[in-house]
Image (cartoon, rainbow, N blue to C red; front, side, top):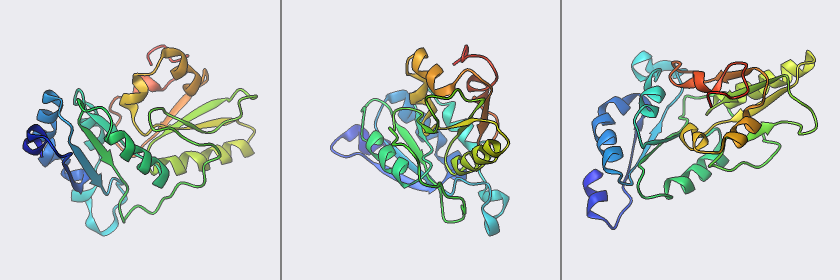
Length: 212
């Protein structure tokens, strides 16, 4: 894929399970170092993979990919975010990207979103601009559905929760400090992602996005 990209004329892409990103890591890292446009589509991103067992359950792989400089990692929550991530993957030429998609074993799905989303931001899915939320729930991929369910349960307990889908943390980090604070809110922030901690602490906590 890297050779095809360097030759020119094509945008190469390949696909495998997310847990097998370990085998692709040297090539992915080289693509990021060279700044070439290649696309890695990685499916079966859920740890709840059923009969395939722990060998096919990605735990540290999202954090591992996000740690590679100059690599864009997308984890879309539904068909709409997947389509918009596809548009983003054909964007800037100097950055390779990895799209992490849900696979056949993932039984969670995201319910209808109340407002449209844009792939380059971390969009708020459930928020009333006239009411200050008590907490912000930030999630990626299929865990966005869990965040939406949690927000509903919190609402029944009188706790106002905003739900934020963060399909690409690398692009969100590039946005202005003011925009990030607006999205993340000034109350406690909770991250929901079935994986190791990785770089999540910078987005969470109770401060007003001082480290964001």
